[in-house]
Image (cartoon, rainbow, N blue to C red):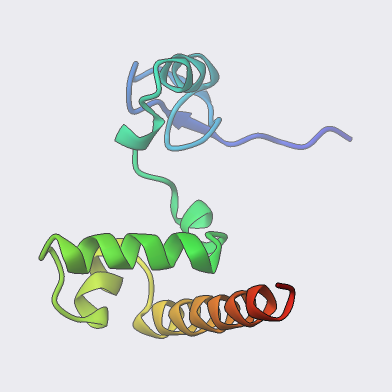
Length: 108
C-alpha cells in the first residue's frame, strides 16, 4: 500500500499540493532549491527535531554572536526547540569536538 502524502497549501504558490518540505509543493521546492533559496523558507518542526547537534550549535552561535539572543533560553525560543533540547545538543556537540581534538593530537 503506497504511503499517503500530506497535502498542504504551498507557502509560495498557495495551491493545495502534496507537501515536499519547508511548506512547499514539489514544483516550488525544486525551484527554490535550484535558485539556492531554500534557506529563505523555515524548516518544519519535524525537520527541526531531526537536526544534528552540530547544526543546532551553529544556529546557537549565530544567534549569540549577532546579538539576537543573549541566553540559551532565548536562543531555544527563537530556534523553536525546548531549552533542554538545545542544552543537550550543545553538550553533545562539545563532547564530539573534544573527541575530535584528542584524535587529531594522537594521530600525528
